[in-house]
Length: 525
Image (tube, rainbow, N blue to C red):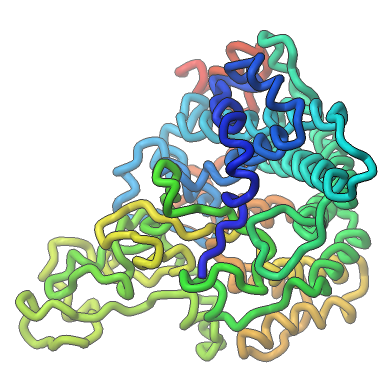
């Protein structure tokens, strides 16, 4: 059964203050929310700050609610290629194709603004929480206060990491900006990472322990997992390994059977460290990921939409050719069957083409000439990790959905531990963590090398939104993009594309320098 832990926290006691917190201005960065006096009053109580933290969680999940950028984390890696229908979403198409991708792109603006709104909300809570008057002799009140402070610190780290990974040159948002005209100045990345590390180390002792199935609430283990990834970026491999192993050994988590992770029937798998929560009663905030990776199979004569065939298809993106080569040596890899849709079947009796029957597999040979579309757009194999059936009241024609979006799984901690030990000169210790991931997938052990880890990372976490940051951290992002895809050759994917343009509206108001390479686009040259 789907649990809605996030939405069931403090709803009754916080509805009024939440309205004001969620109503914050998002025009540029860190502007004060509307209803200032009401917010100040609400934030002076423990119930109020607990309600306000829901608005911070919302700024984490918001990216998955837009057609224009719900899948932005998948783009520009060696695992993805452009689908036939991406042109239906202009901002997404500009970004994904790097055609007209410039400082005026609205998706870039909205993601930047959304994360900074999250930072503003987190800072507002941090500014208020220490001043709260609670009964220090009441363990429950102390625990609640610590938890909300820990969550705010965690999210301040999460948003800063999300921003610095994409833009590199960002404003450090470490306090409430009292002056609405103060947009801050661009900070050195080492200062940003220093704050991230400090915030996570401060958050961990304040947060509650992880409990089985409680996948929508930030816990100590969630913060530890994020900190382990940050330490990998900073090449602090010893501490990264220690944290990753602590997450692996946490009794709330374990590697689950591969077919028990991404289904809709149970979204509290022991595999999941954290997932963004969506609730089918919250009709104003669906997620928009479920349809994006499904090819146009229902354009084939003799095939109609069903949930087991993929539901409504949008064909925005597809897995790259390189991605599929990763399974060629091990066709019995359990992940291949469980996490992918590779074949489609005829299921529409009145419209069957000649020579095929109900239940036959659609092939390039028997579909040719019957649909008016390119074959590769219709039956290209895909990843089904985001698919959603009718469990949460979704209809077959709906583009939106309400299944949770998994952010982190414990298998990533295993791969982090393997890499951290390898790069710390302890490959023998790291080998066991790589072996565990592969054994779960029913494939034999392979030597722990960086190249093998790069491939295993793709097999295990492919199209879950981690690849861009992983390759960028290793310093091989552009190399992999231009060598393993056909959409972004060297003349398209320039050196400067490994970072994003700063939104032009912010550059104009804050008078900061545009990221190198995007100055000409900003000026229209």
